[in-house]
Length: 110
Image (cartoon, rainbow, N blue to C red; front, side, top):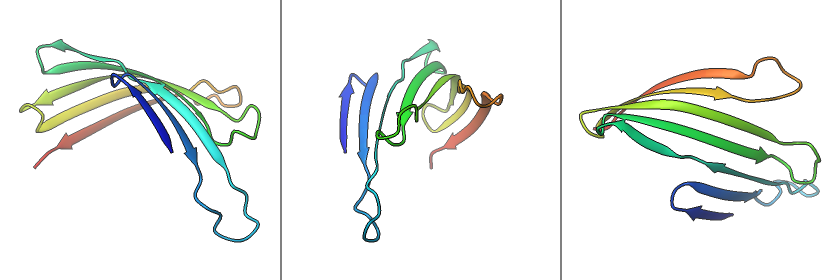
């Protein structure tokens, strides 16, 4: 696997699959990249986050790729010990009408 990071903003990843589990199994190589800008908009309590990602599960199959747009807010309570994250994801796909997801998570550090 190769990973290139440019100031925590852009990452390119290429994932070669592990060796085949049985003789004659195909070896699949995937690739993808993402860019994730973020900025605190109110002190160090509220952070706006954006992300665009592109992924191709098998580089040998043409048109076998997906992309996702994400926008979200992170609220930090008690410094970095507790965080509430709300993200909206939009996946443009020509074959489906279900393009959007709303995700919420809570992270607590002990």
